[in-house]
Image (tube, rainbow over all chains, first blue to last red; front, side, top):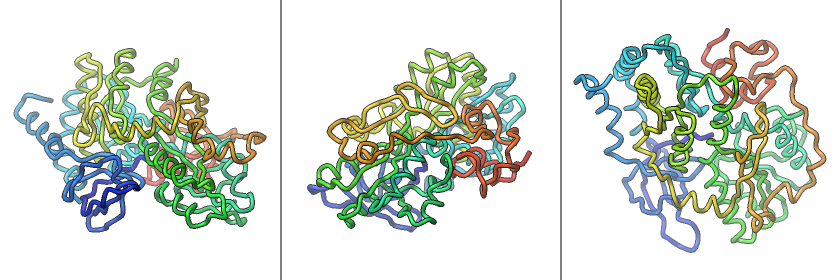
Length: 79
Length: 362
C-alpha cells in the first residue's frame, strides 16, 4: 500500500485552476501523475510516486550515501 | 530502473551483512514497521542471511490488514445498495469480512471497481453523475494526501455523488502501542520510509526519547534495509537511542509540508480500532465537518452492522510482532491465500502472504 516507485518527470503540465498534473516515466512506462505536492519539479527530476501522486523529489547527493557508507566501513571508520 | 537497481547489488548486500555480523555482539530484536519492507526482506532472503543475534519481527504496517472487519462489512453493505459503485485498491477485495468479502459481493452482482488512484475514483464520479461513487479510503499517512486531494477536488467541483469510506490509520500511535505492551520485545524500529516521505520524522523523536529506542527511517530496497539494520544494531550496541535517517534521498526531517497541510485541512485525528489489535487512541483520521457530505458513513445507514471476527485467526499477534506467521496453527492449514482467515494472508503487504509466497513454510 505504501509502495512508492521512483520515476523520471518527463513533462510538467500548465499550472491552472485545477491541480498540476505531469507525465512521469517508470523505466519507459509513462503515466499521468499529480504533481500538486511537488510543485517545483522540472523535467529530468526523479520523484517517488504513490497511488498517482508524487510525494517526494529524490535527492541525487543523498542517493549515493548508501555506497559511501560502505566505503567508509572498508576504510575502517565504521562497522 | 534508476534508483531501484543500484540498491539491489549482491556484493554490496554481502558487505552489509558482514558489517552487521561484526557489529552485533548480543541478541537484538528489530521491527520493520512497513509490510512492503517485510516483503523485500522475505523475498530477498535477508531475514535468513542475518546473523543469529539479529531477529526481525514484522510490524503492523499493512493498512489492508488492520482495516477493521466492521469497515469491510460496511463496504459490502454499501456496495450492495442500488446505484452504488464502490472503488477500491485491489488489495482489499479478498480480505474477509464477517461473512463475505468484496470479491464475492462483486460476483453476486455488486459494482466493485478496482482503481489505482483515488483520482480514478473521482473520475468515475464525474463520469456517472447518476450513481453514488464510494471510494474505500484505506492507508497510512503515505496515502492520506492523495485521498485528501480527491475529497478536496470533489468538494470544489460540487461532486456530491462522491464519498469515501475512511479507514485511515497513523503509524506513530501504533508504534507507541507496541512499545507500551507488556509483552513487547522490540529493541529498535525500522520506520516506514514512505510514511516519513510525507510526514518527516519529527514526530518520531519524542517517541525515541520516551522509550529510549533507536528508530531508523528506512527505504524499501535490499541495500536500504541492510543499511537500516546496520544503523539500528550499531545504535543498540553503543547504547544510543534517537532517530536516524537511512532514506535521506527521499525523506527529510520536515517531510512534505504541502501534503501535510491539505491532509490537516481535510482530515482530523480520531481514535481507531485496528483489526486484531483493538482500539488505539488518536491512531485514525476522519473527514472534518465541512467535508462530511463526502463521508460514506454519514451518507449510508451502516451503524447497525455488528462485525464478527474469525476465532482461529491470530493476525493481531502477527501484526504486533509477537507471533511469526509460520508459528500460527492455522498457517497453510485452515488459512491459505485461497481460503484466508485473516487479511495478512491475502494483502500484498501481509506478513503471512510473504511467508506463504516465498516458500517459508513451517
